[in-house]
Length: 377
Image 1 (cartoon, one colour):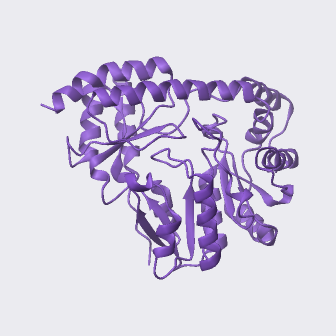
Image 2 (cartoon, one colour):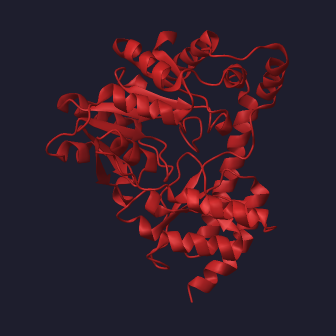
């Protein structure tokens, strides 16, 4: 039997945005969660040096693994052996590896709904069963310990994301500890997607590794480090899984791009530049939240982190894909339909990414305000 997956609908919006742009239209790309800022200057300089001086090949950077291990000691107080760091071609392969390391076909794995589309589809591709827990305003769109405790039977696993996509919500440290306690008591294995760590607008997000050393942790250079096209990420595994994790990486993906590994090592020391991006995201977030309220989009998940606003548009449509298509065609602003993140209620939600420049956010608001006013009539 071959697994059947649902499409990633935002890709269709992105393809339309690209066609409109190529035809001469001015398009503001807020459909994907990718920074528009580019890699740090010093990382780019290192990449240029490597292109001139180094022969690229299959390679795994031991200095980069050691630097990632030091990052977890410095930020989370976790003593990580660099051997526990498996470098990957972005977070997507890391997620595939994590799921195949922990779970067999037929395993039931819980996740929040709304949640990142690839969680659901990767589980199905691996012949596992996604157990989607509806999370709304009362739960701040996040998994809770109470919801996990109520599941009967207990799932085999749990995917956590804090900050989350598409909502940007963060799980509070005490709730995270309660979730870990329930998982230990019920034998639920955790995969923590921490790709948005470093991008929060209050307290820093807590790495699950500080609470549960047996968790598998996914992370990437795509978000905070502003390097999505470099396809570089990592998976943290407990010592008992190192051998099998390396076997999966070697057989399925070989190694990450060598050029990206050189640049990634330098990016760790570009914090001032990268934190400047965070200041831009914070300004964009404030601008967009205020403007959307003026447009009548008042029911919004609280974006504690990441760079998304997930807005309820149910008073205007019951077809978020058609709505996003019209918004793009008529204003040139591209957003993501909620059906990617929630197959049940996503028809009345959409997601905006504010990882673009502040002038583009301001221009998007200027275009959308009259358009949304027209939709409300």
